[in-house]
Length: 567
Image (cartoon, rainbow, N blue to C red; front, top):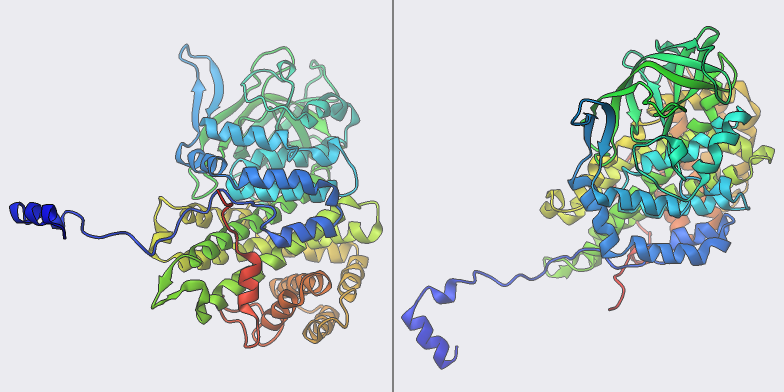
């Protein structure tokens, strides 16, 4: 202490105590990093699965999504939640949902990037792979706005069941223009599409829906017109320009396109009752809605509503895989980043053996999830191929079930790596953790996915052969995988109580296909560790951080750790 400081201290003994401590050994925000290039597993998958042509544009997008300003948009969109105005101040029905500008900017970027429609607007080889990579990057910033983006993307194949409707609506759906105004679609250059399937009494059992559709012989438009009357318990997202709706027509459950505004410019009586208060996915407006004679046009054949939306549901389920893989990547990125900076008991966390075991295990989980997701993107690009089409139909349900159900525990374990600060609401983990269960429930819960796997096998037994043919590509690459595959084949020969055993069977299928992909394509340090930890001993039913001896945890941690850009 110098002389002036000593004099000041003598005059005021408390002055030296004003600063209680100097902050040190702290983490920092993971911002201003290259979200694409520093995700080696993603870059490898993009090139491997047929979208190398998109590498440069994905690189630019990865710099945007990893920037501090862009990541802040996700924070703001969840801090300032949507609000509903059912009427304007004069008493006119408007059903207007108001959003923070950050939400609109995220939507605008997603649509300008083509995440809502690029494989249909530009159906070149690898289009679904490139689009999935963009969706994956965008979802790490904010997940809620992905709901209307996904539904718009998924609506296109459903609408094509009625060519007249597709011809009228598709050009504006494919447009890279985002227009959030609450005005008739004729006044817009770009449109978004939502869906209204679920009712209180049925949930996933849409055949029990009670909403009725009555033929309207006076209405004109692109196809058979109906008036719909009923109640929808979940409508996502109510600010979209039109919705695919399931309702009971005279000939049975059918699908309809219901616009927010009628062709004459009047408000269609699709009336929002309230916005849902959800644990997660908070930035996205989900609503409870009544149809009070709402005009709609039939999509597909009467009585074939479920069949009409199958392609749509397949696409939305695929996006659940993308979103959950993205959640895993963000969670493990945050944990890895923190553990490069924080020390405990005299050592940096990522240099401590037990923490390395946990971090490496989280990395392996994400590697398997991403490999399977991007492989399914390639299958979606090649639906004309019988083998690829079979994989898309069967394995999308397997992946949606497994990846989405693994993500909540993954988010929690990554949060624990941060410690007490990870639980604080001013950090990113509470949002990641609340978001994690959403994809597991949305578009069919775990049981629904497992039953769909069984239905696909029963309806088209050949898909089982296609699945094992895909596993056979890795034969001889890892002894544990070969044994696992042989045991799984034996399991399929025992059909007793198959529905009761469905989760166990689908668990094994998911681990088998992930392992096979990693054995074929990932570095040996990844593939060998995945097989040793998932296919031997207790297999996938284990806590994170229980990797067996011999795994090169340091190499796995180094491979996946993101780092802020210099300057």
